[in-house]
Length: 117
Image 1 (cartoon, rainbow, N blue to C red):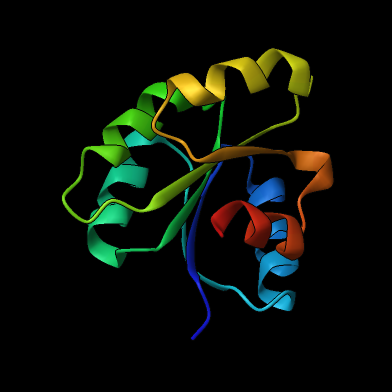
Image 2: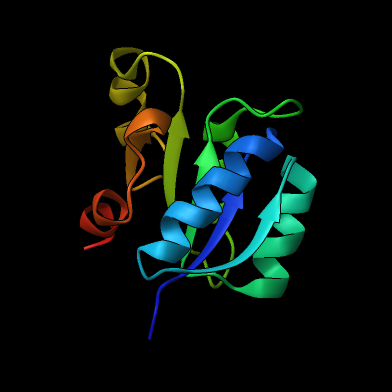
């Protein structure tokens, strides 16, 4: 069974690229969301196993949203992503509910799979 993923990013172009990369790599992308409220609603409705979450959404801080997603009863594993310098993000990841971080430019199905093991 493929791992079910929800992609949360405020840029439609990145969501489209991530969908292709992950689907081609054997993941099942069950939905997309462009903002925090849509992400929470989609996570509750779709019950993904993984949420690929942008650190900087237009309406919310990805770290705060990761924490909110982690408080859900059937919480998904959250993997943060960003186009920002990974050295800025990496020290903050262990302080959040996210399991890991993958830079947008290095997104791959194998990289996401390693973080989910």
